[in-house]
Length: 112
Image 1 (cartoon, rainbow, N blue to C red):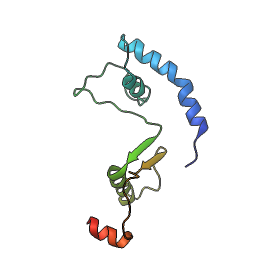
Image 2 (cartoon, rainbow, N blue to C red):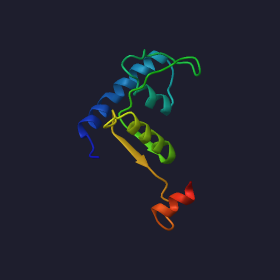
Image 3 (cartoon, rainbow, N blue to C red):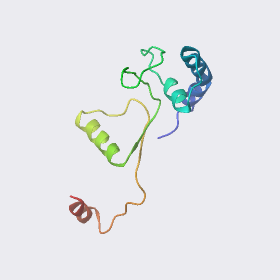
Image 4 (cartoon, one colour):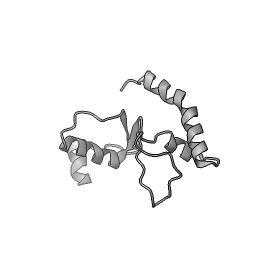
């Protein structure tokens, strides 16, 4: 999938302002994780100091990276519901240490 350079530039241009707004709302220093999460808040989510296990927050990720089995399940769910494409750019990353032994048909029988 080609990179959408305009989307990437827009995100990083807006990043300092988003972090400044969040820092002002929280009135405290922020962790890197908080900076990343607050910079991806959905426009419908209020800017507040969310409580773990108490508040529900909507995020608007600009990219999704999935791994191994969880990616396979997500792809199967997309296929079953008839989706043609994802809402945001999505990549699947697989463990390079998993190797084929005989061939697709034989290996699949062994795996099952």
